[in-house]
Image (cartoon, rainbow, N blue to C red; front, side, top):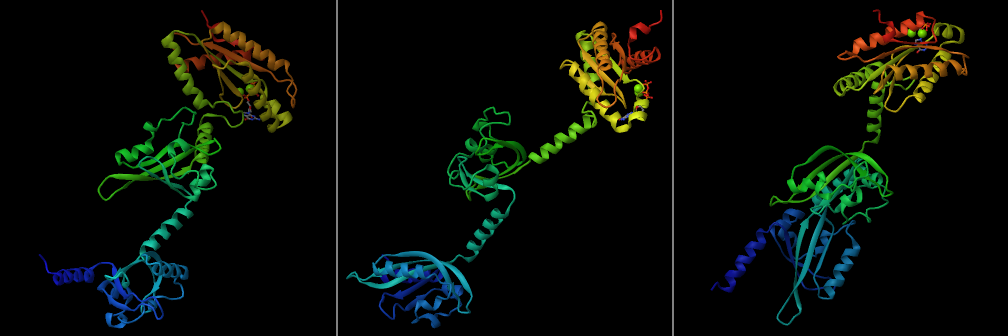
Length: 428
Ligand code: GH3
Ligand code: MG
Ligand code: MG
């Protein structure tokens, strides 16, 4: 058996050495109120007072202009009712420096039940409060959307940018609800995106962060937008994941620019048709496909007649309009599988898959007649000459286009406004 007085010594030692400040006052609530009978070492460090300075003094020496009166009133009401109290407010050190304190007070009663003492434990939470305010300011000021999720993927916080990006006025509709189902339920095409496949949820299962992941989020109004996502797991001290932080930004503009650059790389700016570089790539693919499958493939190459004179008579801008109009007219004539490109200045090439020479000639003739009979708004009559060539067994791209070019040249030399087929040039 440990003697009572020995136990008290052990307790006093523990309190003396505790990390938190401990203050014991008398149980006197009437004016002049309680006075301090004991403070521990941590208290003297927190406040800058020595024990001698505070023992016998009122705890009000810790209060000052920023001390929250409502907290003190609440404190008094609780103590008068014989209850314990817990709260936080601003206190002041001996040197006048304010600090944020979190404290509780518990009454200690004698055998008869009246309050002898109050025991108060206090903690300086200034740095914690400042850290919280710092994170809050950071989150509020960020242009990126940031939200937190728990292990189950439910929203734990959502910053203002995330609310704006997702089309919500406040976080009330989001907090505690399944983030995947609300913002990530389908892919960009609208197909269901099962939770089991969600890469953000996987972060919480594997503990592996997700970086620069491109995906698709949905707004409150049902519209969607492309996003770049970073997701970081939140670890417990014990080494398990209890949630995650998701940072995302809207990359619509980036995606639009990428698509535009891609378009520019493959299309002609004036007519909107494919450019020669891209056409050559498509032609190479189509040729190897035709050679493999044994299907026919033909080219129609055409060129405006006396275009130099048109430019000279009407000006270069009218010349440009004619190129655009011609691209529209011919484009409207072709099947969807056909491919039309601006081959050079005023030379065009049409690739006709699954089409033999007879079919290609027929189409070329239709196009020729249409262009010849349709007056161009700005320059009256315009005619074109056309050369047709069908792919021969084992033929390479260069050879095929050279034969189409030769056919076109023959159409020119034989009087223009006509169609010539490469096969008709063959000399026996
Ligand atoms: P033909 O084909 O009947 O033999 O005579 P042409 O006068 O059309 O002959 P050529 O192919 O030598 O001339 C092509 C002209 O097309 C020269 C050039 O000024 C003009 N041209 C090329 N690209 C453009 C363009 O983008 N806009 C305009 N307005 N003119 C262009
Ligand atoms: Mg020409
Ligand atoms: Mg030309």
